[in-house]
Length: 461
Image (tube, rainbow, N blue to C red; front, top):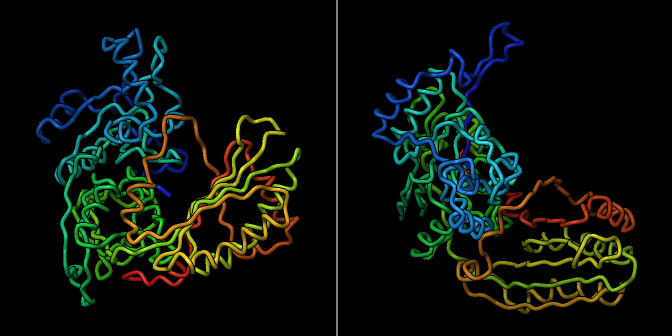
């Protein structure tokens, strides 16, 4: 699920080449002189900045120290929008080694952050940054929103950062055909690198359409797309990588290039899921859109009611064993297993889920899900609560039930893909596997696969 655009210039290790370090470091002869940095700044009209992390105001050894400002930063630390708008903040501070936290009196390790940032607003700014980093062998990273669960190079010491947040623009196309392609026209929206998903959804909805974007409104374009990009409706329409029609980017050589299914097939294939920024810095992408679907949905909880957890894991195992058939029926959603309170082994567990099926009635939806929940309630010592309803518009539902996720906490995710074979084991085996995987905090799983993903026919293959 990813979500920042990043870029890494290729370099050959010293061990393989028998020569010095491939990246320049500050305070060494290889590092660009101040005159060279000034020349870069002039070439991009003053867009080179050296920002401090937002919590620097809490460090009493820095000139920006201010108690009131520190309190204000602390109050916003868990707000996704606050981090998305800052050139250095990331969702989880552990990915920057907790280098600067909003705690009065705690010193910041400024060496953990990029030395300079290009506040890019157009392609020429990105191009200049790529060329400068390549010429001077400076480590280059690219940041979009900081919405990154895996800490992939969206922060890096001793680097030049390109911040794409302010490359803005949304352009609607009633009938878009990629350059040089002889394929059927389709409604699409061209999205600049700095736009966030709530803006994309809103612009598409003005035309009665939606696209494949993140569940969280603050997810950005580049990281989501180049990570494959799952969405709340991917089970029907496929991944973001299946729904992109054209991409504009700056390549490692500094070339501004437009690629699509009909040009540079290797680069086109690599960009759609090949990893954030691995093959270039995305400037914009044109995304296929779909009519906004209706949906029926449910929220349900399965709560442990026994002194020991084993019966709960048996109930959870049964639910998981039914997922292959539920997903084939069109079910999608997001689920979690967590402790009701505290981390003690005796603390009750709860399986909570929000699930939906597109373009179906509430009655038909209930007929698919209710037998599973009824079986759990009748056969296991747990308490099942549920509610369901029909929504005529996925977009209207998304606006209400998809607030930005809480950020600013220590978090590190491990990931597993569970296929039908894994969920068809005996229930005892599934229960044991779930219990072994549970980290005593929260177990998240996304039901984002489905027939639309399995049978996707992305442009260009």
